[in-house]
Image (tube, rainbow, N blue to C red; front, side):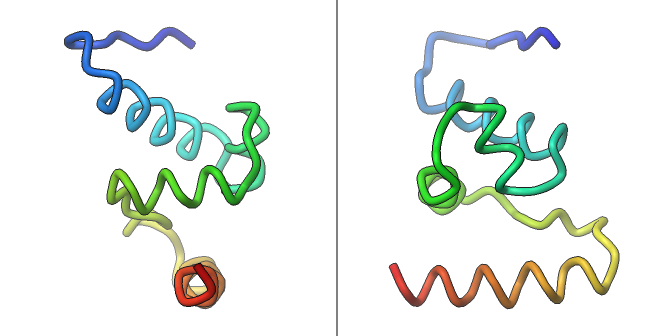
Length: 77
């Protein structure tokens, strides 16, 4: 996969990498493995860049499970 950056903005590049990894992998754990970081590091970047996860197109069962985990991790951090 090839990513095209619009400018030299490092924050925008980091956000794009996270979004693409999440879309490709489908889960935080697998996306973190693609990026070579821990799932906790990816969760911090999701919060930092305000990335909507799970995507609004996810099925109801998937988003309910993911939202429960996300709210627990946000309150813990």
